[in-house]
Length: 470
Image (cartoon, rainbow, N blue to C red; front, side, top):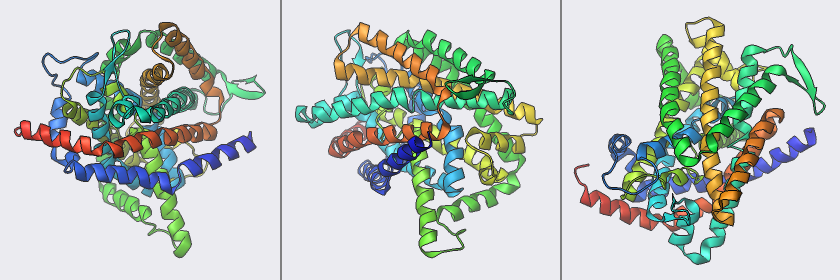
C-alpha cells in the first residue's frame, strides 16, 4: 500500500504542478479583465438574483435550486477537511492562496454558468442538459467534440472515484468515528485491516440514504439540496462566527500569520528553501481551493444548465455566487479558526481532526458538544456533495454513451457501491486520487473557456447594456 500511495502522490504532484496552477489562475485573470471585474461590480446583483426567478423561462429547476445543487457538490469536505489538509502541509499561507484562487475563480465560474446556458440542449427524453461538453461541441465546433468527450471521461471518473464518492464518505466516517470511538476500541478485521464498528455502521447508513435519493434524479436531488444546503451553511457559519467573535482580539495576528506564511516571511532559511515554502503553500492552497469551490473544473455549469432562465449572463452571475459563498465565506472562517487555535501545527493531527481541534479551542461549549457540531456539519456537507456529484457524473456518462434509462440506473448503483467502498480506503490516497481527476477535468474546460472568452465578453457587454439598472 505504501508503494501505491507513493505512486499516486507522484502523479498528483505532476498533474497539480506549477503549469496547471498558472493556467487556471491565468484563465481567471483573463476572464476577470475581459468581463470588467464582474465579480466586484455585480456581486450584489448576483446575490439578489439567487432568490429571484425569471418569468416564463424554460428549465428543469429554479435558479436557486440549480445553485443549491451546485453548492451541494462544492460545499463538502473541502471546506472542513480540505482547508485543514492544505494548511497542515502548506502552512497558514495556504489559506491566502485559496482566497486568491477564489477571487479569480469567481470570474471563471461566471463564464462557466453563462456558457452552460447559452449552449445547452434538450436530450431525447426531453430534459434540458448542458455543461462543458456541450459548450465545447456547440461553441468551439464539432471538430472539438473529442475534447468534450475527454472532459466527460475525466468528470465521470472524478465523480465515481474521487471528489464525488470516496473523499466525501471517507470524511463522514472519519468524523463520526472520531466522535464515537476516537481510540478505535471496538474494531473488526476486514480485508486484512482493522476498522471500527462506527465506521462500518456510518458507511452503511450513508450508502442507504444516498441510494434512496439519487434514484429520483436531478429534481429529487435539487429538492433535498434546497432545504439542507442553506440550513447547513447557516449552522456552520454560526459556529465559525462564535469562534471568531469569541477571540476577536486574535484576528489581526491570525491574518498576519496567514499573509506572512503565504510569502515565506516565516522561513528563516531564506533563499531556495524560502521559495520552496512559498511554492508549497501556493500549490496546496490553490489545489485545495479549486477542490473546494470547483472553479475551472467545469462541474457547476452542468447544474447551471438545468436552471429556469433565458439569460445566460443572469445565470452566470448566480453561478458565480457559489465560489463566493464556498471559499470567500466558508473556507475563510474555517481557516481563521484553525490559525487562531494553531491546530494546523500540532503533531499527530490529520484531516478533520485539525478542524475539530480548532472548534474545541474556539467554541464556548464542552469538548464533546464542539466535536458533535463539527461531525454533524461535515456529515451534511459531504452527504450533499455525494448527491450533487452523482448528477454531474451521470450527465458525463450520458454524453459519452447516450441518454439511456437502463444505463443510468446501472450507473447509479455502481455509484452507490463506490460510496459504500469509500470508508475502507486510506486518507492520503483518497485525496491524491481526487486531486488528480480534478486536474484532468480542468484542462479541457480551461481550453474551452479560453477559446470562448470572446463570447463571454460580448454576452456580458450586451446584457449590461440592456440592463443598465441591474
